[in-house]
Image 1 (spheres, rainbow, N blue to C red):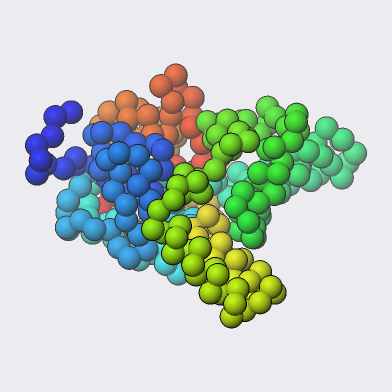
Image 2: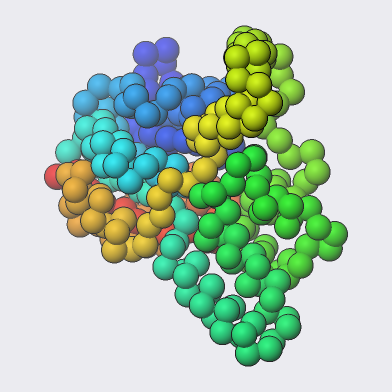
Length: 275
């Protein structure tokens, strides 16, 4: 796709992480690759009204609090052209709950093969909401050798499994010396002098809990449709990972891999329209 210096793609990918495409304007809190625009989306979306034909975000909305989510979605509505599409992917709370109940019943009934499955699905439900360190108990589970119930976990995580289970998996900012790292280093030194050891434990937990990794809310097909309508969208509809009203969707390989596999099989996918 050829772009002039002043041109912009008609599609917006928010919280893009490593899933980017040159036909999209790719935005994340941290620039994860060349061409990705760094932006704190908690402060709004930095584009004019009616700029895009489509807005997409995957596993981003659950990182906003229940109170903040409608305002963020209203921003998504604002930057869409009338008739434009929003596509949202979030962890599917309904599916997690059903799998949890199934694994619970079988574990209580004595099916020992379901105990590891029960442990994993309970982590899916709670760990990313309560963890106090990066990766939490889910990362501990994935670093086991062998991974218990690996086929089940792989079916839930899809393409994320290889990245998360790798011993070297960590944020690029963990090893990159930059101004932000230096600022945080100095801040911790000052905080330790002021707060002492116990105070520093609370300081570190608080910093982590505000870092953006934790889940602040979860959605099912009913509550996601409700919050989209509250933000001004119409006709919310649950769809599959390869289904979309966005032209050429599967060719972007955002929710699916080039071989057709779903990137995040644990997802609920929904599209709605700006009237």
